[in-house]
Image (cartoon, rainbow, N blue to C red; front, side, top):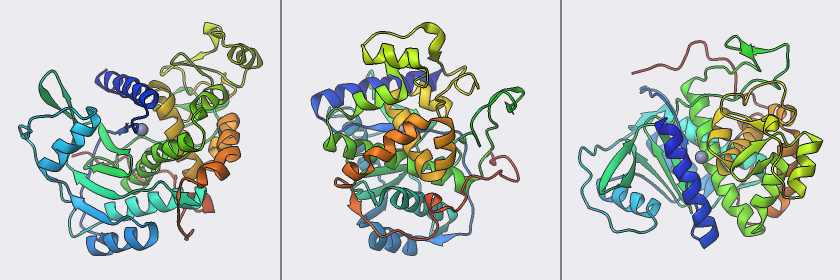
Length: 343
Ligand SMILES: [Zn+2]
């Protein structure tokens, strides 16, 4: 419930910001975390993100940094300089979390031929919102991205997964109709989160390339007045093209999103509950991580992305494709040997 409220407000804020021309901001939700003592060193990570992607700043955020960050999300309001109970987060001198972040960026670069113009990566323990005079911790937020600034929170690598395939009447997820949704290990989860966040950066690039891109996306995906309808249905297509509200029997909700009866199937519950901007970011992440699944489940979203890449690329930072990206054929979403660890 809290998640839904949080996401609803993000969507609303995003729409306002898009309308006003202010850079828009989104967050990805998540669940659990883990810490390990292996993986890439911080020194290597800092060097790699710089040399591969032109990201010049990597830092462990201070409380003052976070105040400024929350201020940006509050559209510039001046906020108190102290966040009660604030704590820092340092992923460490060596951590597999660095590998996951680097791989998530590379996956996106391989799929799109560039990345959004990320300037900095900052690590914070938790996200905060500011409302009614108080800083409110947002433990379900894993990362956020806006206008070149990527914030990564300590639980970014325990987000739920995409389904493994198109939902059919022959597949079940937890005893219900729909394609199975595997648990992800932290590396896979973190990688997906980073691709999702940079998907919001792709949205910014897409908006620069075409100010009407979200109207086009709404038509392709089936969004109308904040509700999602099955865009694969010809009656829905007809209604949407005329600006009419499709019938309620065609509405895809957070409760039925994985049902095989939909022709164009969204990639996750969050893609529905989060609104059009989260659907967009989830579709981008899927395009980078599991393109064949996106194509099978949501051919209209897949085709929309394919047909726009060339124009979006003009607003991306060029990078060199390297091995290890999901779109290059390396499977990144496999069944975890065990559920994500909880602590
Ligand atoms: Zn998001």
